[in-house]
Length: 295
Length: 312
Image 1 (cartoon, one colour):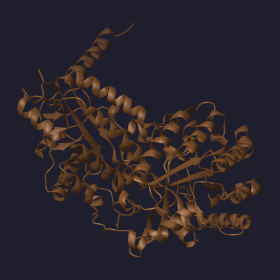
Image 2: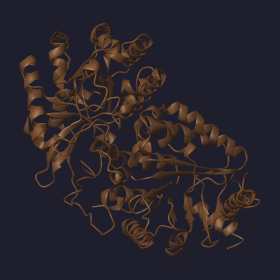
Image 3: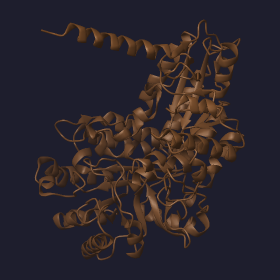
Image 4: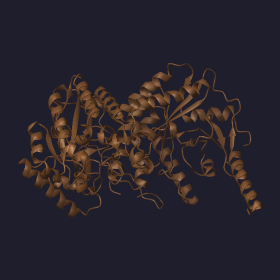
């Protein structure tokens, strides 16, 4: 015979798990863009180059593949965004300041945002070391470009990020539109600018991404991704939504993909009311116009 | 950490499109690698790799078809040869040489050398050079370490000593690197700026990853995607005036409709004026003279700091 009281407890635990996690989120009612704007498109570049592959102890040739992002890819992305007057956000591990400072300075001088992407592209388990990493990354980015970052793309502890003055994260996809996310205690609210793996170049163009099996490889052609992302843009455009396009300089910096992105941006610009700001601009607009209620 | 060792192999920024020039006012450079290896994984060639229908096709009809197509469209290739294959098909290799293609080395058995000690790796490297020198009458100028379908990564494998050993052995270039899409220098010592010229390779233009990959019977067939990638990259690099490299395996690309796609692609690029199609060795000679490491490399000293709890 089954122990019904035990089963009832299990059911209750599931309900608590769902509700407490859900309660961390605060969605924005009646969200609207500034007058004349129909959609915000955030082009974001995760500029870890070879750093994450180094952290995973991958092979010299894998590191060389990542190095392409710093030597070539990031420069092409900056040039592409500048040619379209698109302001992008470069999520940068602090350590990259020691490897490719020239590119970061060039991006900053062109008006792009340099934001945090973890000191060495991972979050240490020990909280004291985690705080050390956040401070190191923040200081390195500020020293390199002369402006303290206010955004991150990471799973860092929110209280630590708040403490260091961060106002937004761009991680996870709990809703299409920007929304607020608190920690488990209902505190330390940050704005979240949703990012989804379906709009991430590495999911289409990068072999052995996060140790994926050879039978599950991602070596598709640019036209297929153009069609998928154009459809994503149109779907959000029609409903006044938001699109965050995640690129990796070592992936999207390849000539054939820059050409595809050039066509994609040109096509987006044929429609009225398409806004290409930095993530910081969107975040500040949301925080000013739709502040969190429960904060 | 001296320099940025363990992180980067070259300088901080590539040459811009405007800085890249090709001989005789040519607009771009295009190279073709013809890989004669049949190794299925990191262990390099095994008997099983050679005793199957695919291998037989690649060594006979497939080989002949690709050779004839290159001749017909007048495309020069660089043939990457594991020394073991030189003993298996010496006449075919010499026939390709006589067609004007370059013969380059690809290890003893096209095995993964990344965990070998320096002495063992040197022994294999010297033996490879010796076997190919005996066949060709001169030492090969280029060295390749292309990926195999069973490798965990699609980039090829080297050990921390490979580049140094290749320089010592007198090789002029390393055939497959991923840090750039033009020739670039793989630096082995910061102070002396000792470096190996490295030519660009990228797996999105390598047939083996699209044709019954990772293996026949259970792999996926994406010949159309391969064709689309070749076209897209060729056109984009043509506009920039840079470099396009494609890698072919006769056992794979010569089959049926795939061969037709290759013929269509190669015929189409013949319509683009100003494409320079040298062997890898010819491209290397040009680059070493026009863009020598001494005046091209701009190495920044390392500012890397070691901290407790951080990467070193």
